[in-house]
Image 1 (spheres, rainbow, N blue to C red):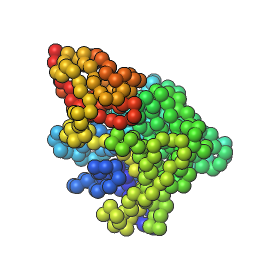
Image 2 (image 1 turned 30 degrees about the vertical axis):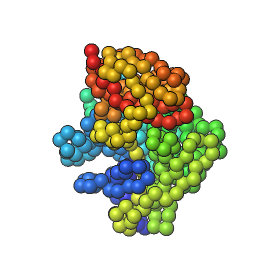
Image 3 (image 1 turned 135 degrees about the vertical axis):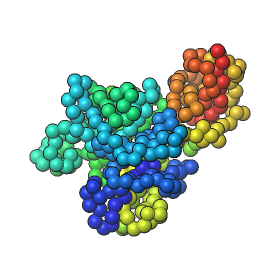
Image 4 (image 1 turned 180 degrees about the vertical axis):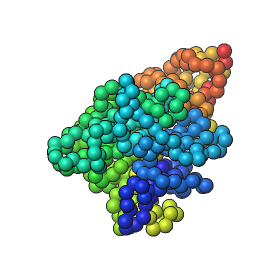
Length: 367
């Protein structure tokens, strides 16, 4: 989890914020990452791709190479342009890796705005949330904006929503946006499509007071959504968390950590961003249950039967870095026969059954 911290009681502007990084085995109990080089930055978001970790802040990215165990000496500049090269001003970037392995940024479009992009001087005002795709070979430093807007929100107050966060579960992309200390939820069935506010929540709010600048994920072990944000506490802003089965009702947020409880002292902590650590294959190996499902034949040429005590609903294939390779949705068979047209190698097979139970196993492809 990335977040920033700043002084209490006077936090100051973004130039006075410091980026920090925490880690957890269960997404609930967090500790600071050892030897992480704190640096100046605000509203960070974190993502892993292959052997690199990327920490994005407005206009910057700092990268960690797992193979060399080295961080960039300094954050690198990040630019977004439209399809003909015009610069796009942006704030509050949230990162995502698409099915082609490209980094994508979701952001609040600040092009042409003067001053605070969250302020609306003469209502009504519209906040535009857009997305961009990485330029090949730029390693997270250059992006091209995708056509249209992901979300357009018009407000009749002096304040606009900010801080998008993007994540995926099964066949749905979820986008959180922040409005004050509240979190609104939008969904789409395509990554760069039009996102619609969740109708089952009051005005789309997962919470209206306990989680500003949010982030979220789906936890496979518990079968729960984990949502995070920050709120105002006795000692300034503190990180909060809610676990919930779905988005049918508003979530119950509780304190996750403060500056003191995570070991930073009497500071404010805010603006969490989250990702799954995909560096180590044994993080997946620990979750294996080879008795719940069986692949036959294994090894195979890609044609396999999945034998299970329950009907298989969805199947996702990952390589050993954690990158998603193939997806089969709505299979709904007890022993489906599937063909995985992928290169030879060792893969992780993730199966969701009709009871939403999750099982991992290994698959070896030989050609």
